[in-house]
Length: 223
Picture 1 (cartoon, one colour):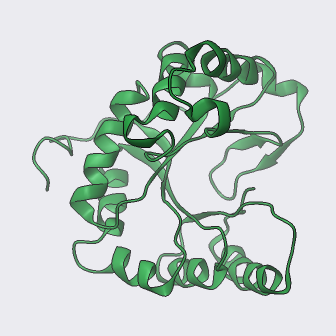
Picture 2 (cartoon, helix red, strand yellow; picture 1 turned 90 degrees about the vertical axis):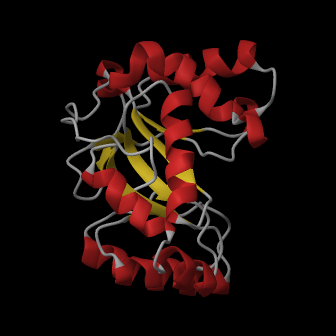
């Protein structure tokens, strides 16, 4: 294991997040997680990833939680090397971690690189665990082969879950769901996050392939 990254002993994870304000919003089951996710969630891009934008970004996250949003998604690459998105969200998580199902991602394709990404994500987000940690932008079969190879990022995800640093595992993609479907075939108990974009013949066919595997794993994809 990479020294200083994975703790010597795993701690017990707290109960799933609960935002009292979510009672006023429609919700859906998040696969087999046991979590009811609000129909509206908050993504960590746009205003939330701009440098020097604390006066806008932090109140935006606070307001989303006030309105009942209970799912927040960010990434280790949102906001560039300074990771502004995780920084801003982390300022709110200092006070309101238990109100949000918190998701982040690693763009690294190796085990050690991903564990370093996770260590910094936890620090910036002011938490000792993520509810969902995802492989970011699996776009090609080469990506799949790389993350599942010996020493690949998938090893980091499994280790982090075993050590209770993350609760659930996932992957994301934008264009080629055949690659996502292959990753799900190799590791069925994984979430799949797919953006809602205008449908094309390619995306319809690709989503159909991904959904076949999704239904077998029991996970619902999220926009």
